[in-house]
Image (cartoon, each protein chain N blue to C red):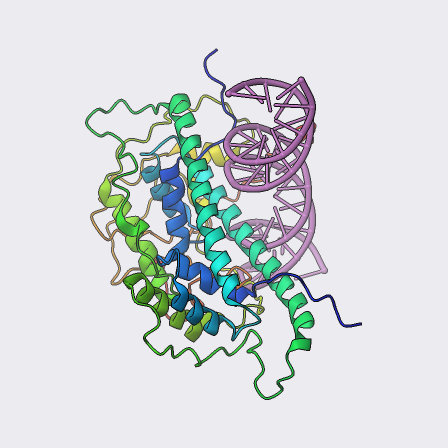
Length: 195
Length: 195
DNA sequence: GCAAATTAATGATTTATTCAAG
DNA sequence: CTTGAATAAATCATTAATTTGC
């Protein structure tokens, strides 16, 4: 019995951690080359194929959204429920939008470093984005046709590799319908120059 | 009908997000004053009490440990099964220790920088050494698994030229309209795994 | 303590949507 | 209006974790 063929990939803890870290760092839908690179690296920790990476990001993103949605709906439920306890018309709890100031933590919040960080984070979150998560605008963006690239094969298409543009060009930046993507709309800023 | 009083706290998405960020940033068992502060802030987003915060951290910590345990055990199993086709004694897979610090980078999930972050991550990984690919020959034969085929095809062959030093950029790979073959030939035969 | 039975997670596939080029 | 590319949603299927009766 030459070991059960194990029909599916099972990530090692290292692989998982790295993938998660990448996800946290903003990667959502890696393009072909990214997938290749990631795969190459992760293969150092265990057997893995490109499709595993691809699927992992797909699933993780999807389930993340799912989780968010669930939270939101639950939240809405709660809103109805809690409305009763709030007779304050003058100071309404920020309804998912405009959660500005108020978070001027007296600065003496916590005492450890971690706390400091947490605080920073908090302000960040506060400042930017917690608001408006309902604006689902799925926009697609063409440039991570990793599949096409794969199909094109490594034969000739492999990029003019050694041709670094000025800054980094790269990121796919796609907005998944939930505004979660880190990437700002690809419109103006980091115009990917696409060679 | 005065609505069901809801016997227990139900975090709003904002509350949850903030708590999770704090957790990621290192907070595990906040003390009384921390709890008070946190509670004060979170109460801005909805009803919440100190004990909710307390319990949340307790539970989250516990479940986090559980998750870790789980991964580890799975990993050990895998070790037996996979043993890695890496015959390189010179390049032993860094076992859980050299996992780059990004695992500690607590809080930097931003939006614009996310790309940069992701990039750094990738570059880091790159720098560590692409080393072996393994999976030179997948034991399974996929007949209709286009993705696997594609991926397996040029696995690890990452452009020889592109010597990924530090800031290698991921080429956008905008396929110039090549390959327009009749893609979806995969599922053709209906038999979908006869449940 | 232990396996069989059950449940939860999550990898892998398939189907539906979306956008825009033609 | 049709079609292709990309991807999100839904679903299927397998593996790991828990529970349960002994």
